[in-house]
Image (cartoon, rainbow, N blue to C red; front, side, top):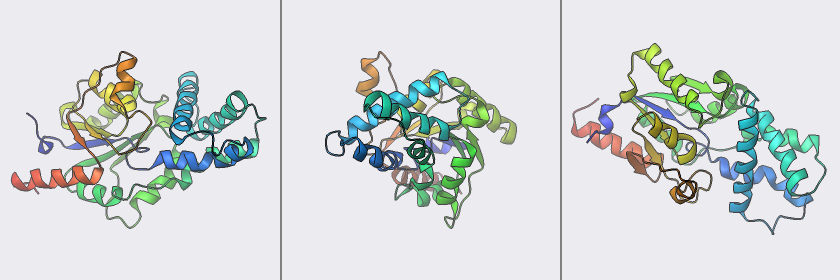
Length: 255
């Protein structure tokens, strides 16, 4: 059985794994929910499921669309098609820019600092560069680490779970550092966006199974669609993964 010490590079999903995007999304929807008188009538789970349903359809139809524009279109579509309200360009734009307000999980920054001692850290995210700049500051500033490579949907021209995103990342890490695919480990919360494509490419992966997550988080939801997903390791938080990494590198005499 492989060990965490066998890898040289971690490829992270960002939103849902490092950043609490579900809370960010729910908070950003509040003005629309208030306007639609749905603040108390739609659950957090149902709202997030509606969000990802609309988001996925827009991304599939518009793989080159900037993520901030995807978010704005999601907001407009939910307002008009699901809540029966006229779209508000001001509210749509604010929702599109809301990534700047999405916060890291409490364990994220310290875990990334510890993991950076043992691996190259790569972001592979369904986001645009301008939006990620806000996230990068929240994650890196004063945390004692920096990402080694940042790859966005804008750079690649498609959105995960498209295999092109992962193939692009594998090619980049090979080009940059000579790291082979079997030394690369996708590390992510979303089974749908990250672990399913990792399975298709034969990559070992680490599932960060954050408690209470809704989007892409349930094996049963995928099984209902006839999709089988596996992963090599499972941790409740990124901090728990960092603990195990330190234990394994320590027992192996690693740096």
